[in-house]
Image 1: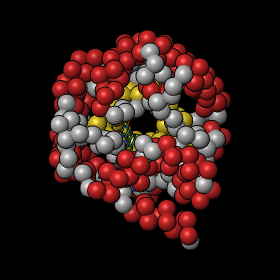
Image 2: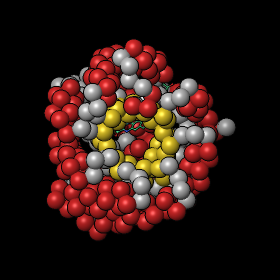
Image 3: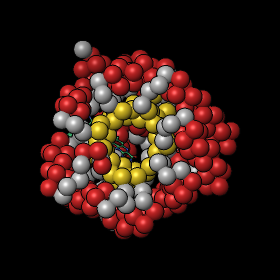
Length: 308
Ligand SMILES: Cc1cc2nc3c(=O)[nH]c(=O)nc-3n(C[C@H](O)[C@H](O)[C@H](O)COP(=O)(O)OP(=O)(O)OC[C@H]3O[C@@H](n4cnc5c(N)ncnc54)[C@H](O)[C@@H]3O)c2cc1C
């Protein structure tokens, strides 16, 4: 892994930098590239504009690894209200959560109850619930939770990370339950025994997994979502779908708010189903550092906002 990326991902775990960043007006300003604001209302307002351009929406309140049962319940209650808000505003929106934000580190049984409550609410309001994938120590438990969710609420989705060596096996195990999969490259600092070190290996794995997902979509056994801003990869996947007779209605492309906006619009114009993931919330530090690590030019952007 390039040194700059490891440093940024290590900095993501620093409590001191976290506290500094959350207090700094300048850093806060720089985050606006990737999030419209800290409040749910900021995200909903930005979402309305994006929806008007023909894109669907995924919302997520930032936060992970909470340390009390009361905090997990507060997150659950926040999302229960949030589903009502997106329904009232008639936004074509879904919600994505991190299992540790709903107490996975404290109790898997309690986390499962919260997730089931949210997936039921999603279904009742015409939406759907997604599980983000966190670092590799959570994959087994997240997939276990996902299978339970899916059994009760078939539109629920989960993210799988192409950089993990185990993902092809996870995908084969999930196929019999008709999963909804958001394939991403992977955003965490992982040991090389667990994840590919070279980006080219991750990119190759991504295309191979995408091909398996497209075959599954053709047979009607899975719903693939490609969560990437890699336009070359998206073009290859779309070409593979076309020759395999998988219609554009059978897969989706999801990207993050503030990244490749023009490309998101172009893909909509070309007939693709595109959704934009919008983050909000006060606990943005770790998430923001992962976004910086994804692209060195983003660090330059922060300096420009600090001093420009
Ligand atoms: C909808 C969605 C959901 C995600 N959910 C998860 C998850 O649950 N778990 C997880 O581990 N990861 C998740 N990720 C993050 C993902 O793992 C990657 O870290 C991230 O998407 C960057 O990889 P890439 O596929 O865009 O490809 P890359 O090869 O990294 O990037 C391709 C190009 O996209 C542009 N780009 C990429 N990232 C940025 C950025 N931060 N700022 C500006 N330009 C950028 C650059 O031009 C770059 O050259 C998610 C990503 C998306 C889009």
